[in-house]
Amino acid sequence: MRSLILLHLFLSLLVSPAFSIRVGGWRPIEDIDDTHVKEIAEYAIFEYNKGQNTLLTFSRVVKGETQVVAGVNYRLLVQVKGGEDGSTMEYEVVVWEKPWLKFMQLTSFKPIEY
Image: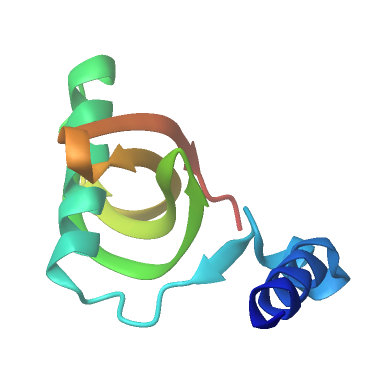
């Protein structure tokens, strides 16, 4: 009987509106200074530089969010230095990571226009 109650409770949570909002949704990263978050940002910049033949350099992560998918998507607002004058620019980057496979893929790198 107890097992049936627990199963019913679990199934109720799966179909509740509150649960469906969280599954696959973006959640803020609490510690944007975390070493792994910085590694994700540096990886994104490295991959972008390689593909675009540019020399952007990492400055800092301004903010970020994660999304659980088949792995984790990281959506970060990163500040970089680049260009001939060394100006500071911001980009929104998205990196898909599967840590158990040691897999990372840059999926988006867009300049922020203010």
